[in-house]
Length: 283
View 1 (cartoon, one colour):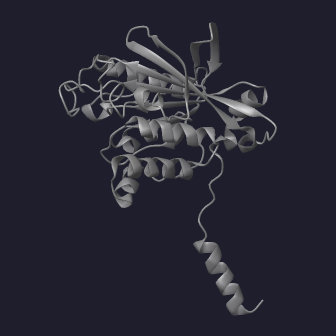
View 2 (cartoon, one colour):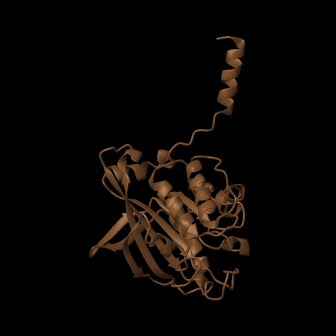
View 3 (cartoon, one colour):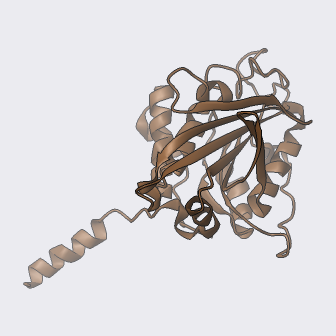
């Protein structure tokens, strides 16, 4: 190869986009569960929007306990309503009352092509569990998310009359960033209780507030934000589907950007600025 050819090759390598390995590359427990025929479970904590904390857009959208109309739950782009919409790729498994401070739990499923997980002859069940937390109890919602992210957890729901208990593999938070009000995350659990899983945080400016603490606890952070934003249902949907398709962290971010452009009608450069660029693929 000529000197010029070697120089061009070196430039092409430097200019090549970085690799985007599947988010599950180091999630040994997740891969083991799926190979054993268990579902992939994504669990999302959704504190309802409260006008006492932020401007939710209208009086009715900011009623902290109003499931039917709340901005983050029952409104047109609310998490439950969006996944439950007519054109949704998700099918409803169960919607049931929750135990205080959880007002309601909504569970959905879809089928994934197993080839995305190295199992070409399998159909994998993906479960998404949404938990509506009363907006006045948002601090408990933050703690609930943190506990699952750092210690793992079990999702419980009814499916065709049968009680199911499934391990949570990815946990999300979609709501107001309470840490911006001065609330602090609990301490990192001691090693004996630590069993971190993968997580994402859809909240205003979540990277500086949640990101470092989650990573210090060994949590794989799939997506955070770096600006003010609306943690609405189309983002929960986009992240959950990309996670189910076992794509990489950059692809998860791209899916969130695409959803924002489509559903909010904003410029791509503005949507791109909202979501933090992933810096590491694993803790």
